[in-house]
Image (tube, rainbow, N blue to C red; front, side):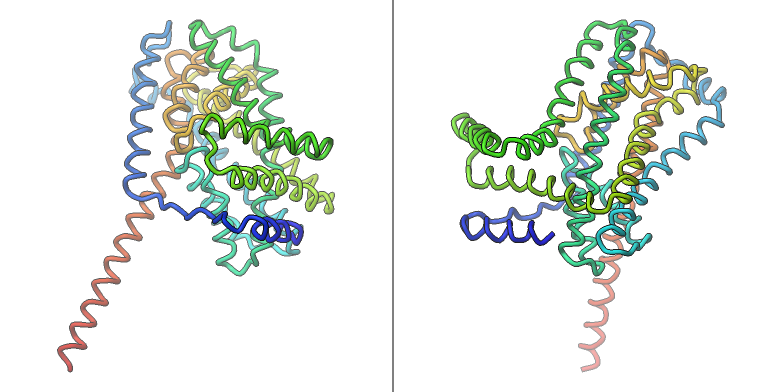
Length: 385
């Protein structure tokens, strides 16, 4: 990671006026706002599905009585397995970078990353907090950055590969969506979403193959952004663009020097994302007798609905994800789609938000108790004097 450090130093020497942004805290107002978004998304999900042909939610009590507990347990097991695979990914990268593995620290790093990804727009809060956490636990700055950024760089490529393949395989399922508006939305927004997410790896490829053209293109976009008053500070915008591409390229270069680790990381990342996209199938199967032959169909629909809202700037795509996935899954499970989406999001998203709220309340109480003890101690010391 020496090259990245030299790059940072050189850029700051040339542009001393650029300062790093201050970190913003996600406080109670942010949490309340997030809960309101989630609630509003769930409300709209029920409202929209009520007016779709054949999508009206079935009686909940009857569904729970007839629920297949085997597939419910499989769903819960997969919801636990997926974060566990992420821990394994961090362990592989950690071993490649430092030569050692600290499972407890890496497990907490995974949970911390998921929580902050889920409460920040565009899932941008996880990596900085993870780097900070590793650095607090005796990883030096270069190693903590490398572990998080390498895993992220490889992961985003695997996410896109698995997503594109599943969207291609499940493309025919879009025709099964009876509502024309829903079908067009998932198709157009899904393609737009995956195109936006492809920008980073494609940009890196262009910088490698044609660096002069890539530099000209980047500066041209910044100039256009300035004219449209989207970009206020061109130096800062260029720094961010160049650094992102540089870090991405350097991460691949670093991990590629350890081919065994690199291959293992890619394979596990692919498995992780296939299971992530396929998980709703098992949730739906716990509610209804969907056929195994539709596993790829559901995973493909999930890919479309995920990318369709990937550019929506709500924390964890809250609200948008509930609506898009219920529209998609209604094609294979009308009547139970809304309940399947709620259970799926509970297992993979809401549980982290709930855990975060509980831990935040615990910390507030703990600080209040400590402060009360300190005040009491000072009063006793004053009385003794």
